[in-house]
Image (cartoon, rainbow, N blue to C red; front, side, top):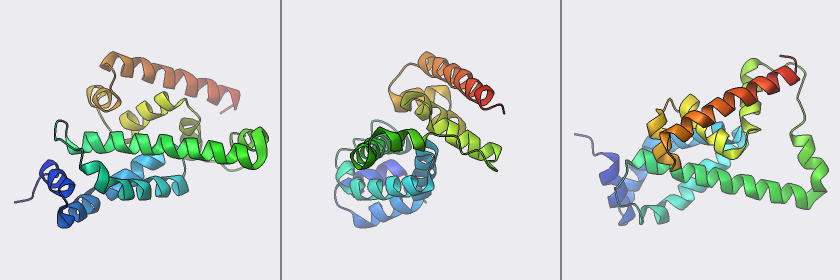
Length: 177
């Protein structure tokens, strides 16, 4: 019989290295995939996943099992992605001012597939909208599940997805897709 994630998380939080290894083995790909959806970049997703792997032993000490482990892990990943985005923005401003930041958001143009465009477009959304879209579209989560992870009402999730659709439609029209 397989031990459930919540039991493993509590054991890992108490220093059980084997439990920690099982959790990482089970969920590393999920963290990476979700980090990619949040950041729009494979490299940033790798950084986010590594950051989570480093943070997780300490963070598990605070896991109380009040939510499912995967819900708690999604929340941790969102926070890591936000931290990575803040660090990247600060680094970009420090290195070359606002011109480099504007260049990061310039249209790619040549040979971009629909999937690449969508990933780029989702990464350009406001963080709350991008997080919502990543959970619903990328993680196949329900509105109530996303609401629980993001700490908002399910109605807010529905409104955010409406905004995502409007924003993506406007971006596609502006880029003549």
